[in-house]
Length: 213
Image (cartoon, rainbow, N blue to C red; front, top):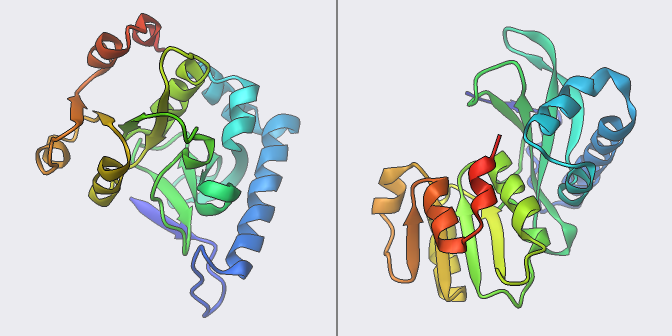
């Protein structure tokens, strides 16, 4: 279930409007501060620590914490994940409920989840790894982004159009996804489909990936 939050009266904003950008930047900054400083969101910090994500990674991805009202669990702590593109422009803000199902998320109305992690790319890298799980994407970035022998950009997306665009820009695209219908629909020229972490470790030689918590 995707629950839409933060409606602005009768106005239906979009991410490329200045008013939307102003509001979500305030929200993300507040959520970042809460994650690092406030005791009542300790559950979110423990959640990130379970995934072995460090405070330095929280900062790089601008992760945050806040409380939202869940449709049957009342007010709950949520992990705030901003989707940021080039020039640090926020395109979407997603909230992950910690005590609900994996598919129970919410997002700010008007956002567009296109490519998570784009703001951390190095333009000189000639390959890209795309996965369809946000936290796995962030874990992989933490593990691999400082490895000079593996010049690869890492992101998350589930949009077929994104793969098409990346295919025209990069020499090699690696897809880590269990969504067989998505993979089967893609033109596989210069694309490696990697169903699991074993396959990723095989192509990268980075076997610490197999120790993921």
